[in-house]
Amino acid sequence: MRESALRWWFCYRRRGKRRQVGSVGKGMSGVIGREPELAVLEEFLDRGTPWLALLLTGGPGIGKTALWERGLRLARDRGIRVLAARPSGAEAELSFAGLFDLLEGIDIGSVGGLPVPQRRALEAALLRAEPMDAAPERFAIAAGLLGVLRSLAASEPLLIAVDDLQWLDAASAEVLAFAARRAQGQRSQFLLSRRSGPATGVEGALGPAVLHTAEVGPLNLVDDRHRTACRGSCR
Ligand SMILES: Nc1ncnc2c1ncn2[C@@H]1O[C@H](COP(=O)(O)OP(=O)(O)O)[C@@H](O)[C@H]1O
Ligand SMILES: [Mg+2]
Image (cartoon, rainbow, N blue to C red; front, side, top):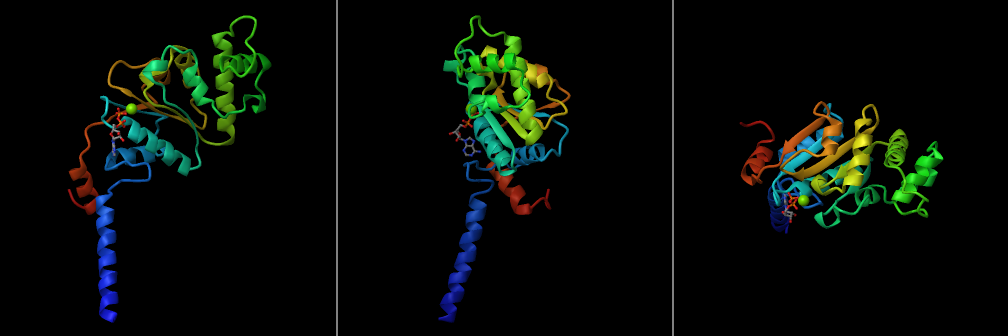
């Protein structure tokens, strides 16, 4: 009896260990491996880096979205409010589709101190209010977005997250760039991803001093498992 209990305990421990090794870096969001990239993400979200923005780049299918999604989860676990958009190529021509996603669930009317023309312009752009007589000015929409982001960041840390930035519609990209240019000193961060290729306007607005680009390479499970097994003590 005692022997079988011991055997059970031994198997339990072994099973547990095997499960641990077999799921290196695999969290609830299904990311396998990527230990170095996840470490960078966590350090960034913990504000252990001077970066205001982290950009994941790489070819299609390399794993950018998997990491980006994990970043959102890590941010939420830390009590960071996440505003996210995942533009697609099919919607790149729809003005303010990206902004619509970013501000989904945000009650703009309750944002204190937002001047009425900015609130009305933003609400009209998001199709939450009757269209104005004339199309709302981009400047008013951009200023309204900045006001909303500043107000949110004043009450809690904020992560503005855009996956596949190369497909963000031009109108959203323009107003987001306006806000990005003025984001320093706020409690907001940006987590971006895009395919390898030319830099976008949002990146230009952030500038190289605060934007860190991480090239996502192929998965290297062997190295990741080795690193985890060694817990940093071997070369
Ligand atoms: N580290 C990973 N662990 C598990 N699955 C992954 C990982 N990286 C990518 N994948 C899977 O590979 C596929 C392509 O990854 P994805 O993140 O969409 O690539 P990208 O955004 O670079 O085009 C998806 O099905 C994704 O779930
Ligand atoms: Mg993707």
